[in-house]
Length: 602
Image (cartoon, rainbow, N blue to C red; front, side, top):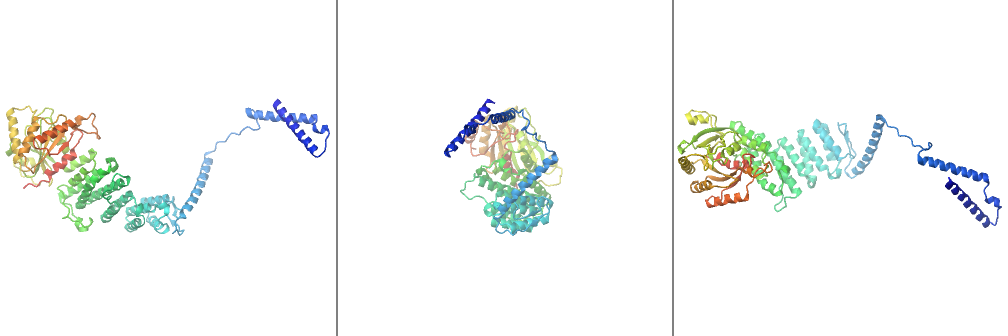
């Protein structure tokens, strides 16, 4: 209060001084009483100052009532919704102004309105956005609205030009083409594709080209699909760096598009076109590896391709397959004579899979094994060459020391649990066990008892032979000698033998018995028989094997294998790493088993 009174008195003194100075300037001297305020005036000023100070003090301490803030009332739900609608309306108005400014770049705009049946997008005008067009296309495709799809086409081709939506019209045309093909409107789709390729070639994306190819395949138009594949998804030029994002994207969608062509061809009973597409994938595989694309990035539909090839092969075996490729010209200018079919169409898929990165997927390889091994029969057990079944098909044999895992490996590649008997006691296999793959049912009775069984074996039928184990087998020395003589006679004189797998334990490497087998093979095995060294039990070298680390072999063991092979004259033979537990190496094994399946024995 005292400070307020002092402030008021100082103001009055300052006013008095100013008044005196002005009077002196005008040569007028006022009486003293004029400069000194009267007592009532001072008292009134002091009271006013006290009142002002108390009111401010009350407001600072929050005890005053005149300036107390009012409590904000909570809005009801209808009021909040009304505010939200008003806010959305203001935002829509602002977006509309932006669209009008953007659409001013469309030089060919006529100002027409293209009415649609949709309630969300009721019309398309020059002020419409790319999102509006996409929503309209999706709705027309899902509802099969012919009226809307035609108006969308007129809007994109007649109302707006290539500058619409910042050059996004090409992508919209590809979406329109896919939607039109989904609705079986071939004419509209073809027009959209032609305009896209002529006007928007520089902005075409591999993802859009792949989608157009799938749409054409859905309409059974494989000729145009291959044309777009060669034009828009062609391979990068030689010498180009392949691991760039642009080239990776192009290679990826080219591979997926070819896979779609192969799958569609097999499911629609066009085996020649399907095999031809698999040859394209086989040629593309090395480029895929060079580009650095991973299995996860590719996501190749191998299981579906195998399913289609197996279905087509089944019709082929039953005689229900009509070879239409050469007649209808769907595959361009190729015919039956120019494309040779394998004994099983699935082998063409296997060739392509071998060139691509592999993740050892169980679902894929189970489908592969089931397609390649449809029936398995135990034919006979032989202890001499005269007891072997007739040499009327190709044959693959497995040899190795006892407890190396021969029977387990045979069960793995045939996807059977107990085709070849497995035992913890080494040397359980005491004879040459012959198994027939894809033979006619009842074949074993025909061999044992001479029964006349109707039917013919399949084209891809072959024998698998599980030979006795050497080394640790608890058998007399005389029996071992008999096995050795039989093996030498079998390798040298079995004319239908096409592939010999020599199994070696990946944990320990070759032993003396393995060296003896290698030496015997180098001296007696005919040149037309393939010899392959297979390292088994690779999962035992890995702690906690998984799909990403399903097995390995130490460097010292691999060097020991190579040195032993070289010392015994089989140094050029391939070496495979396998595991019957993690299913490692089954794709490599089937590439060689194919030699027996495709063998033509006279």
